[in-house]
Image (tube, rainbow, N blue to C red):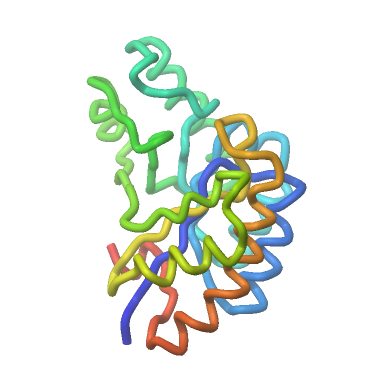
Length: 195
C-alpha cells in the first residue's frame, strides 16, 4: 500500500477547521495540523478536538512571520511563547514547520532547544490562491503525489497571504481527491507512522 500524509498550515480558523475535521473524521483520516499559536489561543476547542480525534498538532510559529525578517530575540520569543501556548493544551509538541518553509540562522538552535523535528512538504496545490478551484486543487494533488509524500494544504491563511475563503475550496478539493487517491492504492498515515 502506498502512503500519504495530509498536513494543514496556518489555522485553526473557526470558519473552516471544524468543517475540515468533520471531513477527516468521515473519511477516517488522521492528519497533522501546523498551527499558528496565536490562532490556537483563539480556538482552543478546535485544538482539543484535533487531539481527541487523533490528529498531530505541530507548531507553525507564533504569528506567521517570515524568518528572514526576524532576529535572534524575536525568534527566541516566538518559540518560547508558542511552546507555552501549545503545551497548555496537553501533550508535548514534536514537530515544527516554519512559515513559507523559510529558516534563518537561529531556527536550528531553537529546534534543538525544544527538541522539535522540522517537517517541510513534498506536494503543494496552491490552495491558498483565490483562483484555485476545488477541481484544480484536487487535480494538482493527484498529479503530484507519490508514495511517502507529505501534502501541504491550508485551513486558514488570510492573515498570512492566503485569499479570503480559500480553505473552503481546499475542503471541497479534498472531497474530490480522497476517493481517487484511495482508488489508486494510497492510504493516509500520520507523521508518527512515517517518520
